[in-house]
Image 1 (cartoon, rainbow, N blue to C red):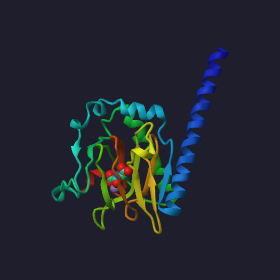
Image 2: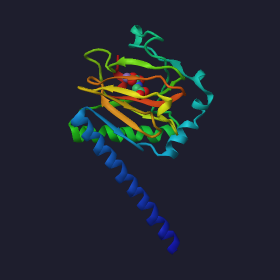
Image 3: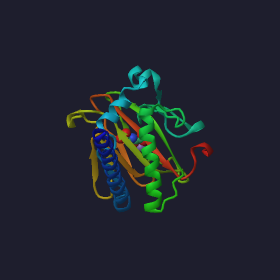
Image 4: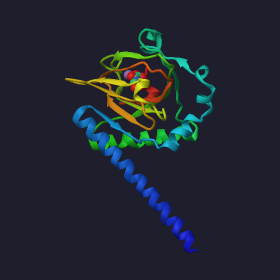
Length: 224
Ligand code: OGA
Ligand code: MN
């Protein structure tokens, strides 16, 4: 009995620590966005959460499950190897496996948090799994395709355990007076204003995996 009480107390404790941990993340992401237009949060996903995602059949099956990413949207979509070389698979929020669900639910909480704390009116978000084969890259670009685009914030979470600086694959963000390189370390989340921050993905010597998404000011379903 005492033992059961102790277990309940410990799990409430863990829950509390996790909530506290997430709130700290959310706070620092909101601060970063407000002050600089970008934020980097390490351990947004725990090592166990990352490995659950990497164990999904779709990642194990390899690149054949993915589509070559294009540039632009719908009819205007073009595939241009010289600009980007990644492969993607859009996630369906209603049918995603549990491992991905954990991430999507956390993003959904982040959307609500940012709306409340930064007075944004984000309505939805969209996410794809992304694979950059060794040697591939994404040249300098802005994530909004055109002025009236609905992408407000870009959010990328990396899934690469034990990534070393010499393996490359940095996200390079072009800031006002400088540029900032960030390694795609497992569990790390980068969030930035889609309309303001130009960025690129540098080539890596190893396959580079991530969850790439956007927070939108309109519902995904009504998107044209
Ligand atoms: C993108 C992109 C950055 C990254 O998919 O639009 O810029 O670090 N990704 O993967
Ligand atoms: Mn981009």
